[in-house]
Image (cartoon, rainbow, N blue to C red; front, side, top):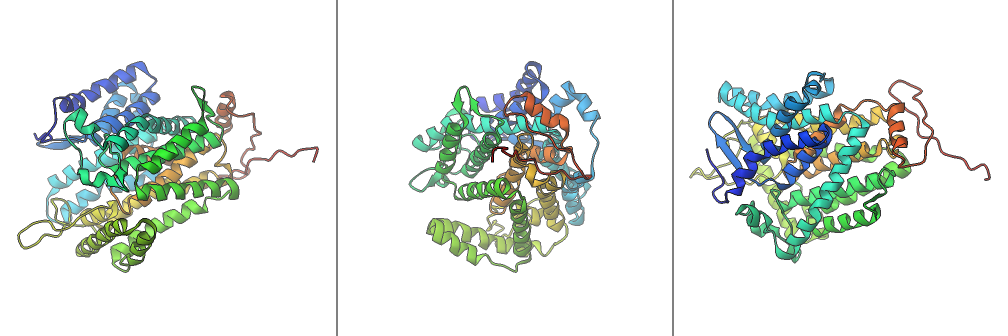
Length: 477
């Protein structure tokens, strides 16, 4: 077993005591709320640490988050597991889980290695997706999850402010060591907070997620105030903090998310969301095939964010060129694990840097793995438009779901440059994938909550289609 080279006694206490704390949450709270609290609190506050045991997958922050939730579900909510029925939309996640197994077999690494890698993929992707499928498959539960995202951002505010002023020190102060290189926290004349996450980029994306969730809840009228504080005040604070996190990519994605929200609200179309998804697929295709070197994007970054950010982007592109060329030698299933997809010099030293999710997946699991990742992340948000026309996406019963669909697509866009995995997004994916069509009951739930005056509900006229909400006409006009 290996433990973090540095750290205090609190690290193993928290990591191995978390499952017991989660069981206590299930005893005190309704199961769904226990899942939301356990999911967000674990990811935001557990240490960035990893323990390796012989014969079983490593135990780290991600494993503790997803595996503990699954075990607690088996103990307290076994009927949810037994009632689960797979759908065709679950096929991509199955392919993604078993893609490493195919990679290991095709590279002669053996079935044991393949099953071990598939098991790790199950912990990383499969369990969070399954949790989302069984707990968040209706509109009320998705609304609670969106509110949990917003509260998660509010909870992180004081920690972000502290590290913006004092530098990223909380992980060291609490757990005894820095979770990442300190030099990467210095940006634009200040500090980029990391708090208890792996990197400042992850914190920036999390605060953007919370901001967008808050805007959707406020604009749709689902939540107007919290403890007497108007929502617009809290959202303004979150928005400013997201900017002050000094993550250029997250700031750009925040702006893009607001534009998508505006197109949905005023143009009643989800074409902007589909366009971003198409750009993600096109980007991976042209970069993986080596047909585009990305020089234009580097120059654009230099003009907007300066030479330092442009150099960072150029470094990414340079390494991606080398790694994609290596991946094309094993195009279908990739090179498998053990660093075989990377480039080494004559002394056996790794001379490449991998930043993005897609290039890592392409190298290890080939075209099969990359296609599965794109399908898992992008299919549920895109198919939401088939279940619900965009004209309904601003309705209070649907707005939290639509917001999470936008967040998921933005996360995929972030993964074009980074590899900031977050199981919370995968839980959201599972929820969107298993969401049932809107019914009279869903709209009635919103009315009972008295968050908005009653609206007339118009039943669907065609199978799989729902007309836009009716507009009230002033008889005095």
